Length: 158
Image 1 (spheres, rainbow, N blue to C red):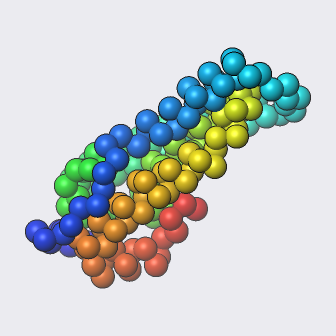
Image 2 (tube, rainbow, N blue to C red):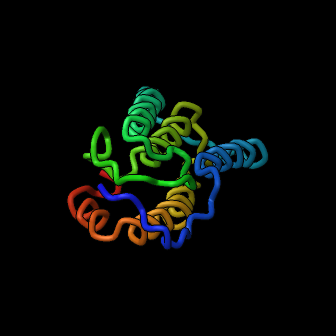
């Protein structure tokens, strides 16, 4: 699809989105050490957690390869040269952020950290409002109709 216009305003500010869930996991772990919550986790949650820990790196690797094949920025604040609508981007506009959330849930379940589970909604909201919406605003201003068409065809999450 088309290259961005030179006048595209860049609202993207957050430099490293993986820091959001990583910080929340550390915070959840620390809160659990200070204020333990006794939760009787069902046995199956650990198995689901492992699946959710393995799948996201595969999804992220696929997304990075797709970006590189299309010669566009992997860095969330880099210069985007095209709208990528192949690979995992055919199914979700945000495979890397979806992977981050899946990994977050996976680690939470494997480690059985109830405080991290409680922080899932703030993590989602921080990614959504702090990273994804500004990226979408940037892409809209940079690519106009091409991005709007892609956005209509492909869901934000799944």
